[in-house]
Structures are given as structure tokens and as C-alpha cells.
Image (cartoon, rainbow, N blue to C red; front, side, top):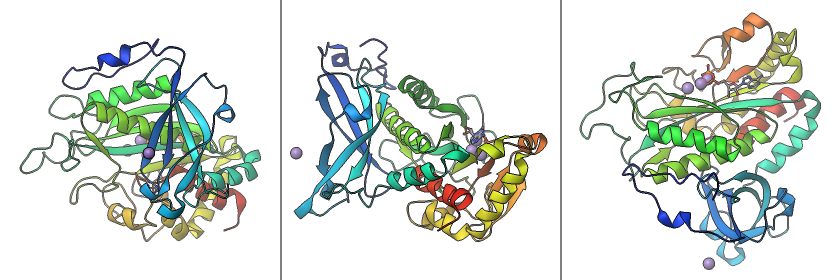
Length: 365
Ligand code: ADP
Ligand code: MN
Ligand code: MN
Ligand code: MN
Ligand code: MN
């Protein structure tokens, strides 16, 4: 179990059985996205040896009638291993295996958007697209009913002191955040940073820059690790884009994107062309930016709380109330990347990155 991190719960408990020798077998946790398009499922199998690549791993299957992915009469959905990460919960040689879902005819399952994402990333390969996603989320209590550590009656003090804050009166759940960050580094997930958010018990971490479909792989595995770490601490993670109505910030997944020409001298011209193309497809993008075709984001993209209205496209330098923001540093350099602020916290990164690359690089619908 070298390098194993067995997370202690908030009560200081750990599981002594995890220290037992596992012999020469390894455990592989196969995970996939279920029919909701936002929840992860997974199950474990024993392997005799450590695989060199996903191609060395056996395909597997699960009961799709229990995950909203098939009918009971023809229930097997197949799991195709596509990416391997180290398992920060079991440690040692144990692994996390991200899978794509396939139907009985060996065709990509209708709930598997990774497949189309890869196809389009390959078409756009010479542009070398990079993505970086800022995942915002909210911690809830173990019953997933109340925001973690919010007062039982009434509300915390108004927003203001919490963003990037310190102190026990401003910060709730930092142990979860720190454990998640370290566990992502251990696993090999390209986590880039983290910060406390504007609403108390709301947090953000960034993943990337990642090239092409890797963005989706790394974000999904980072989400698995987040839910699992939170489970150890007996709290829940909500990716609802507007968990609390009223004067409380929602949660998004700002998606930063660049192509090679955007990253080079004179790149601003390419950034502006991409923004114009995205403006023409605003509606299609909104439909792809949450798992409910825009309904989830309608609660969040109100025009208040650092968002732009869902009905209007806008952009601006350093403008956090715009659909698309050009970071100040990018304007200063004249090249770099753009930030699409519209995707909701529960979006599917394969769907979002695919939509963006179709619009800016493939010019078809
Ligand atoms: P902010 O909160 O100011 O919007 P963050 O620091 O939270 O910004 O996130 C910046 C994101 O931009 C990170 O996910 C990072 O990976 C991503 N990023 C940086 N450079 C590029 C680039 N050239 N192409 C795509 N994404 C990038
Ligand atoms: Mn069974
Ligand atoms: Mn950020
Ligand atoms: Mn943020
Ligand atoms: Mn941002």
C-alpha cells in the first residue's frame, strides 16, 4: 500500500482493514456516466496484473435498467475502458478506470457523448485545442438537504467575506477541499488550483489546460474523487447550478478555450473570430451547457450574481457579467484564450467541449 492515503473522517476515524495486504491482486474501479448525464456510477473488479494502457483492460458490463440506460428486457450495457488513473482511496497499484458506454450492438450508447467529442477533436487536431474548466460546487450535509454548516434557522451573513476567505467563521469544509486537491494530484488528474467561492460552503477548483478529449476525462475523474472524498467526511457535493434561491451566487463551470493560433502572436484576431461564431450559435450552446437542455442554467443565468442573461449573448474584456470574458492579461498580451462563462456546474465536459469545437473549428452543425 505504498503511497496510500486512507482519508480520516471528520471524527478522526480510519478504516484499519485498508492496511491489510492485498497480495499480488489489484482492484480496478470502473466508472461511467449514467443516463442522467450528470451522475457517476462505478463498480470494482479484481485484476491479476497492472495494465499498461486501457487497451489491456477487459471490457465489462452493467445493468442499464438500473441506471436509466436500457430496458430490463435487454439490460446489458457494455463498459469500454478509456483512461486509467491511480486510485487515491485504495492506494498502491489499484486503479480508477474511466469507461465509455456501448450498446449491445457494439455501437456507442446514446448516453455516451465522449465518442462524438473524440471524432470532432480529431477533425480539429491541427488547431491543437486546449481547455481549462473551473468547476464550482456546493457542500451539503450528509442528507443532501441543507448547505453544509449553514445555520439551522435563517441564513449566514450576506455574501462578501467568503470568497477566497480564511477563518472558521467564513470557511466551511476546507478539509474536504484539501483532501480532494491532494487526491487529484496523487491520481494524476490535471488539477490546476482551488479557491473558496462567493457563497459560504461553495468552492471551486480548476482542471487543465488539457488538450482535446482529455479535458472531459480529467474533469469526470476529478468529480468522482470529489464525491468520494466528501463521502469519507460524511458530507455531500451538489453540482446544482443554483442550489439556493435568492441573493446567493449560483455555480458554473467556466470553460476556457484556446487553439494554437489563439495562443500565438496576433492571437486576439482568432479569439474575436471564435467569439463571433459563438454569438451566432448562442441558442445551440445554451442547449448543450447543462444536462436539461438549458433548464438548469435558466435558474442561474439571470444577469445577476456575475452571470449574463441566458437570452442574450455578450462579451467583454475582464467582464464577469458577460457570456464570454477575455481575461485582462490576454488583452494585454494580444493572444491567449477566452473564457465561456455560460456552462453550468453540472454540465458534461464532453458535450460542452464538443459544442465549442464544432462552432469555432468545424463550421457545421
Ligand atoms: P478566473 O477565476 O479568473 O476565471 P481561473 O484561474 O479560475 O480563472 O481559471 C483559469 C482557467 O483557464 C484554468 O482552468 C486554466 O487551466 C485555463 N487556461 C489557462 N490558459 C489556457 C489556455 N491557453 N487555453 C485554455 N485554457 C487555459
Ligand atoms: Mn448482480
Ligand atoms: Mn476561477
Ligand atoms: Mn468561480
Ligand atoms: Mn472564471
